[in-house]
Image 1 (spheres, rainbow, N blue to C red):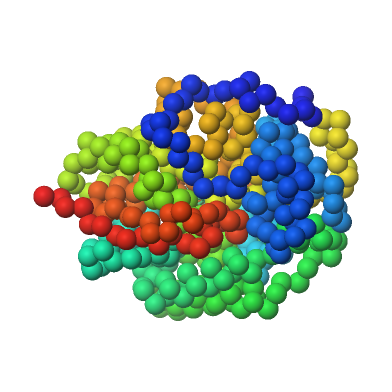
Image 2 (cartoon, rainbow, N blue to C red; image 1 turned 90 degrees about the vertical axis):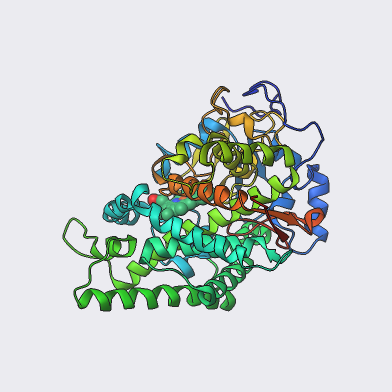
Length: 478
Ligand code: HEM
């Protein structure tokens, strides 16, 4: 049943958890404000970030309706309704027109934003490519890229200052390109990618409140010139690498990687993807595969830098499991605290903060009527911080995911989405994150210089508003 009153905070306490440190540090997040305070902010602040426009009710109630705008907006925090929308009724809730128009300049008709029959068709064609993403197969490429990252950090001068996000974007983009095209990204390309993505995120309309409220589902807005420019820089890069591959293929060279799996994919009639469509799918994998992991790792490193006791415990585990040897594929399973730290980081800063859908037909959420064309928001950001399901919801407590505790209520932990359209790369992301955390933290400390002003904003992923500038300290292994 959908409760319309405020949920009782301690009713569903999942786990009896106590933070590792008694000091009251709270990871940066907008303060919980009343509807009135948020209303005034929206009226008087030009383009406030979406995370800043969520009143307290969004963190305590099951369903929130937004009373203004051109179409009804429903924010759904009710686990069973979330599960219904994302699983058995997913055909009635395709990806929202806003999400599609924001990402289509970059992703074309790629599988992440396709819906209905097109999604079914392409998803089936891509199954062998997903098979390619076998972890053990990708692991050597991943490790090579992380090795290069560690070398770059080693070469920095003592007390050098870096932008954490751009460093992490470099290594995760490198990993994705190596697994897609079997070749490293190179420093100049990495920088161009980071710049184009940062700009793409800033110019992306989906996550600005005024667009959600003013948009008309039947008339999708045209993308801005800036967005088209950023997208074409990224697509040109992929096209260049694809053409190089097609040339090598024509000379008889054979590859076993993601690009090859997409090029070789055939549908039931034996037809391949067009060149444009191959670029769409590669763009999905490149975007979905590096941007999200870079975002979640930025927050993980930042929170660890603010919580020395958690960092100490993590380093102890790394030392106990790995001693002085490199991270091997099977270590992933033994590093349970590393895994819990990353899970908790994904809870507090889910890179995909808002999964948005469009109601194709009229429906009902409990007693609430949902008109056709309503804008449906399922927000990992909100449900992960919902006070009814998460004790000390705003605190960083990795031990809440300890295997001896109780599991989260189904439908309340969604960093990778849910159901048939859930992330195909979830295990890769977790392996990659564990590898990077272990190989970096055993050698370096990142000391943020702007810790007091680090604050999340919602772009394509959840990002720190002004980056995280860090001094890199090398750990004396002797
Ligand atoms: C921390 C890292 C990651 C996070 C948090 C994440 C999150 C998500 C979420 C929430 C969705 C579902 C979106 C929706 O329902 O609207 C999704 C879909 C997807 N993700 Fe990820 N992802 C991550 C890493 C990756 C990686 C590494 C890859 C590939 C190598 C990947 C490939 C995909 C693809 C292809 C889809 C679309 C699936 C479909 O619609 O059929 N993701 N991801």
